[in-house]
Image (tube, rainbow, N blue to C red):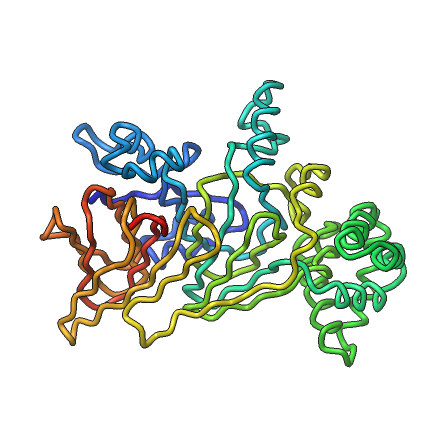
Length: 398
């Protein structure tokens, strides 16, 4: 087992206190938005090697069979997931992730054209897709997925004015084509159009229809934080999701989303590909974003980890990862055997838990915020103590 030191990301939307509180460290005045606990080359966690800290991706490359296992190494060629602690204090950019085919094609095209990886106008950082899910550690809010088309039509018609063209486009084209046509109309709005929309949404915050009232409140909330940004208007097309601690939502490739606030554990495909729709000052690649969006998807599904279960497994419809939440109970003296095999990342979400393996019976004690990488070759993991232990693993590996 290897103790992990995560890679810090100090994006401006990050909280200046929440991550520090969770890790029990002193704030330094700067935002601490994300802690990456994985092997992505742009931000690998580190482990203690014989000559000092060593990036996890380098460690895995030294002995892929031992660390990843034959099945994961041959199927994915890398650790297929990335685990993050996430602490937004204001909304992240509204975004979508491309599927694997699009990501590979886009990456190779930008490589061929010599676009530097750190170029702010670069759209594809690697060849991989990024299905993701977020598990709420505290109350967590976000925009997730398209609303049903009838609901989008209701909202566009209620606001009217500059949105009338989007409403007409939605009605004239069938289903997916209508949703795309409506979004394209919104993307064409100018600053004066946005201001006119905001006058109306401000008035509609007292509308008797709860859907209209809530959606317009979200528009105004986002417009206050991102003045003049079209993302606030686009939020009319998306669902607002509120997760309680212990709840999770999964976002497949092509699903638009924006996290708004809270503290959570995020697991995703091992990729850094982000195509933005709004709520950002960064580059928006409109053609690629429109190509990546799945206009046929709508809604979302929230799953809850029952507090009475020792272990609950979230297994999304993607081969890269699954998540188990285990709550061993010291009073009962029980030891919980964790599900799954292969390469695993453990994160303590509360209390104190001891993790041990077949090759390391002594194991390691984890307190809140501490994490481990467990190589495939170490076999079964058992957990004891009194706390909450999250485990990321590859579900098809048994």
